[in-house]
Image (cartoon, rainbow, N blue to C red; front, side, top):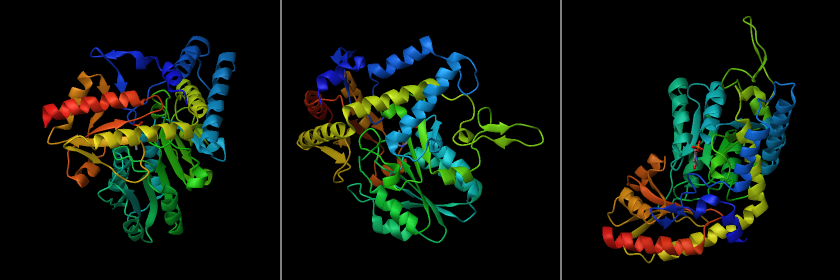
Length: 403
Ligand SMILES: *Cc1c(COP(=O)(O)O)cnc(C)c1O
């Protein structure tokens, strides 16, 4: 991979922040967007903007074709069997809410679902809402000090009432890569379904939903070089067919009458209202971009930066890294001495370095480690060793000031 030419695809990377060169290490929250994707959005707005699926006119037909090509592009990207299994949503959060609300209606009081201690709030709260509405029971898989899930504890959580496991493939805080295929196989042996949160995975590892054994797989465009406001729910077709609609409105109906309304076929049954057809088409461009780089190449590059940064951070007195699982993803959560994560983040920002601070929408995980929050640096295809060197130099300055 030629990092200089990749960086040239991202105009934002050449801006200054507080008079310093921007060093963007907040990729686990949102990646930046390459010119090819932004250009596509501009092109659509200037040349082809029209609502999809309803129009006889040329622009609408072009828009519809682009949206359905995007669906096919996503299908290929994650190895799904058919486009009927690809639902466009607003993002990971909405995808999980869709599953919890719709599949949740098929659950009965006393049924159980299994989550893990390292889930993002968006993979906790929709299930809690369901629990309060339907009387289902939530069980939680613990992790060890390194941030590795306890698979024995996981196995022990199953009962004849277990209906679903919902687990993140990669922790957005610890970088842990969970053995989701193995966890899915265990769940299936107990007759339970598996929903995999792929928000931190799809831009960093090749995903094949069938090889993983995912019954549902969810992710967001904005964390994989795509536009904001669009995401994906993959669901196995036979499951989606049995599930009731999530939202009602236009697009999702067969026929509407006050004496009874019928639903559209998949995937439209789950896409009420005008979809983000511009975002969907641009997501396809982002997939082209990512696969053009080669996900394996991106992963290797990020891994090298992770190892390099980690080895240097370990030499900084008072710096503690949270999340030391083997083969982790390129996310580094840390604290320096007693310094507040927020103060560290502010000082880094003054040096032009963008990191995330806080609980990272994973408060139960913070509780597990007995902390309020961390500072988190996370890498993408366009980050460099030179940036890591600057980050480390900045951390040394911060440590000298705060510790
Ligand atoms: C970001 C993230 C989410 C939520 O994604 P949204 O795009 O905010 O809906 C869920 N799970 C994980 C692991 C994440 O990193």
